[in-house]
Image (tube, chains in turn green, yellow):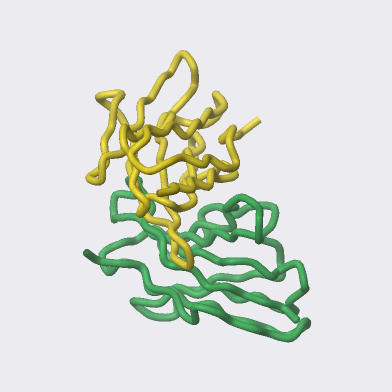
Length: 114
Length: 113
């Protein structure tokens, strides 16, 4: 069964540095998402992306964050000037060309800011 | 307010016993409802979904959930659990007129031998 894949599985970064989290959505999917889960808290929506632009973003997704689909397969989340509170599990998800649910999630990237 | 509420943070149960994990949603959440399971050190896997039609939906591993509009609930049940069902279970709903999911806080199901 096709899967959403995320790399790396664990990223350790110094505070203030930039980090890029990578995702390869399911190949025929056109809707892409990032969520995050701070340890012990609920999974929170960050941003959705369709047709090479952001379709929706949450209050969390401020100017520190950006997303990009640099080629036909990758979908990236960039976090600039990382802060301690950015430490979390970041999940990528995608849905099929109709946009119909459900969203299929990757295994996540655990981001640790030191 | 937009919310999905899971009333139990932890549910301990013995193997082969029945279990119910509770989920309620607010009226601003659409009737697209989901249960995801997260095994240790793994990502979110879709367990089952309700989009329309029959209010009782089933998964391949024996879980079922019933959509109850009047009670705004989507509780997850299994008549007989296994050790391998030990995991975190998340209820989620899609917000009307958006494509984002809102998640509950999760319920940790711990199955004991």
